[in-house]
Length: 279
Image (tube, rainbow, N blue to C red):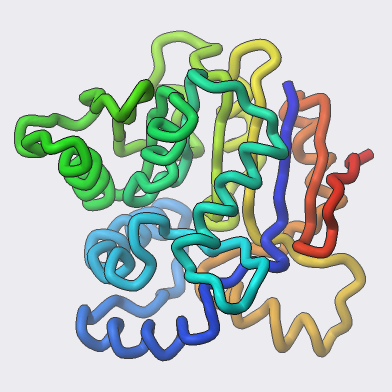
């Protein structure tokens, strides 16, 4: 199996994101992050959070609830968000028409892009029932179908591809599928940092991948050799918002190897044009 990981060092949602977020947060009454005393409680609070906040996120981010890969400060976030998806496609060299599991699919924006533009058959999973509901509606609306007639897990055809959406815990996702080796690719974009047990996720991903399948990751990773002041200023505030970016790029190779992935390459920033191998 192979893994392609993209660290989000150079990803952004635009310079005005904080102001927009403050106004919309007040309008929608989105909940502030809370401390958690157990993994089960953490996951329940995540479900609660996205149940309340997903419509707000759609208003702020659009259909793609992830950052963008900007090459020019004048670009729209929508164009940069799509560029991130295309960059991952290019780096992973995914063939058209394959079966993809989109982990942490949010509102299904990436799933729909992969189905529509790359003719893939995509299963999107999220821990949030609200996001499944919204993903189904947005997908059905795109092809002028009645979303009320679509149940959870129903396939929706988009061009030569298709999407379907399920409410699943990424750390236990292999339990849902009756057989192993179901997908050609497991895709996870800016969701792994929220998973308490990353090795358990990788083990589940391995079970679901066919021989020769690929794991594609885009997420936040802590840069090597940060100073104490940088950790205090940049890392701890983010981790206080329930995102774990304590994993550095280099140790990721050990985690992947423990889950039996055999080949790993990383593109770490917009200035790093060529992927590098992880030993």
